[in-house]
Image (cartoon, rainbow, N blue to C red; front, side, top):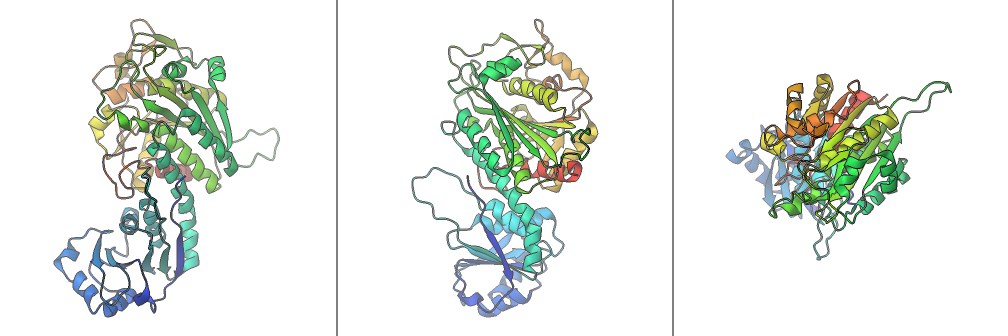
Amino acid sequence: MTHPVAIRFVETELDDLAAREGRIAVLITPEGKLTAASRRLDRLTRGAVARAVGSPAWGKLKPGEGMVIGWPGGLAAEALVLISLPRKASLAEARKAGATVGKALDEKGALVIAENHPSAAEIAFGLALRAYRFDYLSEEKKPFGPVSMMVAHPEEVAAKAAPHAALAEGVFFTRDLVNEPANILTTDDFAARLAAMHELGLDVQILEEDELKDLGMRALLGVGQGSESPSKVVVMQWNGLSKPANGDAEEEPPLALVGKGVCFDTGGISIKPAAGMEEMTMDMGGAAVVAGVMRTLALRNAPVNVVGLVGLVENMPDGKAQRPGDIVKSMKGDTIEVINTDAEGRLVLADVLWYAQQKFRPRAVIDLATLTGAIIVALGHENAGVFANDDGFAQDVVQAARAEGEGAWHMPLQPAYDSLIKSRLADIKNTGGRWAGAITAAAFLNKFVNSETPWCHIDIAGVALPPGETALSPKGASGWGVMTLDRLIRDKFEA
C-alpha cells in the first residue's frame, strides 16, 4: 500500500538555511509580521520576503495558502514558500497550510519552519495527507524526499502528531482501495488485503459463498450471481477493551461499521450508460472506508470494541445475472422485488446489516456506501448524506465530520417515504423511482435495522471520488470518512 511520507521534527536552527536544497516553507501571519526565521530568510534573499508580504497579493491569500518565490537569490533552495497562517488557526486552516507544501513535494524534499506555532502537528498532518500519489504510469516514480519540520519543542510536537500517523495510514489505505482498477481489486484480492491486517491485531474472518447461502444471504448473493468473482463477507474485529475481570460479566458490545463493497458495478441487466462507467471501480468506497477505519484503530491501539463488516460482490450482466422483476428473500426473511438491478448496493447492505446485528448485538451501527446518484444531485460533491433512526446519533456524526473538515449533511427519513418502496408482490421493492432517490434507499435499509439499535447510514457517492482535487487530496479517491469515524469513535465510543 501507499504509505504517508515520514516527517521528522527537529529543533529550530537557522544558520544553515542558505545551503538547504529542495523547498523551504515558512509560516507568516496574514498581517505580514515576520518571525525570527522569516527575518533570517529576508536577509538571505535581500529583502524578498518583506517585499512579498508587503505586496497586495499577500493580503488576498486565504489562511493556509502560500506565495512561492522561485529560485530565490541567496538560497540554494529551488523555492521559498511563504504561507499565510494566523497564530490562532483553525484545524482546517492549519492542515491546509501543510497541504500547500505537500501538494508540491518532490524527490528533493522540504523543510517546513513552524517555530513555536501551536498548530504544528496539524500542519504536519495536512502535509502528509496531500503528499499522496497513485497511478500505474510505466515511468519510474522517484520517492518523495525527506521532510523536516523545525519546531521549538520537537518531542512535544512529535507526541501530538503520533496519532495522526495512524490516521494517515488509514486514509491512504482507503484511497488505495478506491483508486485500484477492478481487474486488480477483485473480491478475492480485496478480501486478501483485509485478511493481511491480522498482523495488526485484527481478528479477520472471510465468509465464502457456501457460508453465505447457509446464512440465507440471498439478497447479497443475487447481486453477484452474474460474476466470475465470488461474493464474500469479510468481518474484522478490533477488541481494544480488556475482558471484564469478573468472568460472569459481559464484554462491552461493539460499534458495528458496515460497508458496501461492489468492486465493479455495471448496473447488471439494468446496465449503466457507457460514459463514466469506468469510475464504477469506486463502488466499493464504503467498504474501503470501513477498512481504513479498522486499520487506524489497530495502529493506534484504540481502547474500544469495533467490528467492521464488508459485503464484497461484483455486479455483472452475465446469463446467470439477476433480472429486473426477480424476487429474493433476505437473511432477515423479508422478500424483495428487484425493480432495478442497478440498485444493488442496498441489497448487499440489507443482509450484512442484519448479520451484524444478529451476530454481534452492537451498541450502534453505521453503514457507509456509494449508494445513489441522487445524493449527488442533492448535495453535490461537498457533503455526504447522513440518515439515521436517531437524530442525536446523526448529529454526532455530522459534528465529527465538521470537526475534521469533512462535509456531511443530515437528511430526512420520515415514515411517509416508505410508501414509495412498497411492492405489489413482495414485502418491499429495491427502488422507489426517481423522486427522493437517496431517501428511499435509506428507507429501504431502515427495514433491516432493529428499531432499538441506533443506526446511521452515510451515502458517500458524491465525496468518495470527487471530480477534482480537494484541499487535502489530489484528484482521485479522497478517503472521506476515515477521519470522521475515527473522531466519532474517539469522542463518543472509546472508554
